[in-house]
Length: 311
Image (cartoon, rainbow, N blue to C red):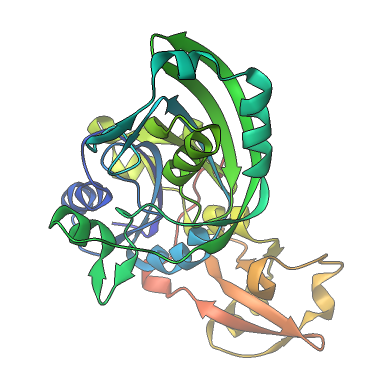
């Protein structure tokens, strides 16, 4: 099995680890990992790395993300989503009195650089154990607030019913943002409570759900995004000569003057170094005009030409 990146559309009702386990069987290798966990209730884009490309997942985890979600105003739950027990319900007339401008004002306070307390059933570790495991075991978990950035928080649709208001929203946010916490905090600010009833991840950085494969239809070999294609989506790409590719592959430093005008590097000051035959040689960093490989990709797990992200 070649090395590469897989874009998978995770279905509802299974964990991210379930997706990894199934992909390991399909790919015939245990070297499969994922970037960015999705709860069982959530659906959408899950990015997997196969074989040597698992090392690219480090650069996927911290990318910004886009979600499509439904927030239900009018009640709060133990988990801040539909899987938890309802702990408080607002009077129907109080919910009906929630004005559109009040919702808009609440959303504005949750947009931009904010401080957010994660949901108590998150995967954050407390004393070595996952917070969600402690909560489900009957424990009381209090998590510290953390800075996150919500770049966009848009209402796509609103549906009113007796005692509830459902808001379909689009959220673009930094890594580590909890959409369930946004639902909780919006409901709290409006005085009626709130929780999440649906969540779908539609984008991670340059990778989109439209390019993902359904898990029940996954053909690993056909769906594999080559390391060069994936790395070129994550970082500015440098097309190497054969000599440069050999030298970098052997760990040599090379003069970057021959690369021409490269522009700004990507995250971590890195570029994707691609050989003439479309193999990813590695990720390189340029310091004082000298290029050196920061992450090597071994030839025995090199990629073959593949489709690019968004193709």
